[in-house]
Image 1: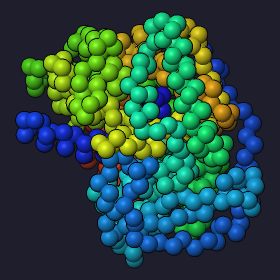
Image 2 (image 1 turned 90 degrees about the vertical axis):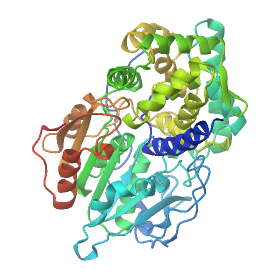
Image 3 (image 1 turned 180 degrees about the vertical axis):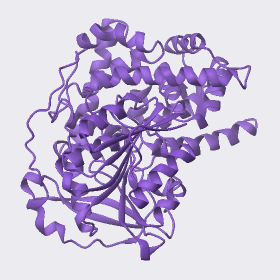
Length: 522
């Protein structure tokens, strides 16, 4: 489990994987530094140097099947006849825009009511590391209303999926990497974890080193403005989820005059450094776990307690249980699986069954949940999800934590979450020894002069805690960030099925009707 929020696509993969698992079972068989905004080296109009690319014509064609780097475990089917795919040419290095170019994979479905078309609505579903090319078609039914007046458009950000997706280790080595002890209790275990993180970073440099300096959020925002121009839109209309809200905030900071109607859903706190974010996320997952337990006891007599879950994790550290396919469910994989199940109420029943089964020596369900978190398909292939997440996070943030830093704050993490605290604390080693320096300590998302941006926070969100929405609205600036609250569960709000949220967002994106600040949906 990383300190960065996960993508919606991981949840879609999980649903598909668990459907397969369920069918089989039924047949019997992821020290704090002071916040500051260092001066940026990026110009305020960073695509100007790439003028010839602004007039490129996209060659839209029928979409190919998702690649393994985009979508671990995909069935290998293209998204369908409504969808078209193309590749945007962008500079590898915007400081040398006339130099080497890279391809940014894009996908779209045209608006169904062309006579009332507004333009393109660009989606980013988060991660960082999630493939928009596979995610958008998977969630297309949720956006049918928006598609009446928008071309629905998404992309694989640079370093993700088909856009030169980062790779770090072979699949078999990744199996061992994610299964290994992630909560060291002795100096020897700490050294082993540090060595594994170092080997992982070396693998990323070996396999993807050419791209690592150029795949951070600032360059992804520049790519988005290039997309806007190539798509023929005067303004960027945007739908950002999870990390996609951070990307949207950085875009608004760089290009405030180019912002059209923009939504942020499942909102990242831009004022937090990685340690603060990890601590808040530990508390967020603990809150979601408590909400799950409360709800479970109202409908079932078989609900696990927090003590049961902690006892299970302690036992798995000493003695893993079979998870199927010749693999074992370890403590690390089980913790990832439990966290993954908290992304949506739809998965709570799997958590109940998964914990019970693991206590009885069957780790299949929790292993499947953990694999979804890590981007592993049932065929053993990993997508670029976690490698890209690591690479983008480490290209963005300059903090590099040591084992001593984490030990000093370990008690604070355990207080925030007895279940997830240690796991979240030690995940802060992910950028230690990374071959590329990070750009900032926290991202600057101030966007003076931007059109209003709708920011929706979910009170029960485990991955991007509710407080982040308020912080984002503040950081965007007065008259820009418009905060709205959804009192619910799961990661994000628009896809929750809540009619109030959907109605307010649709009215904003389709008609330009900005909700009153502070609007609440339950």
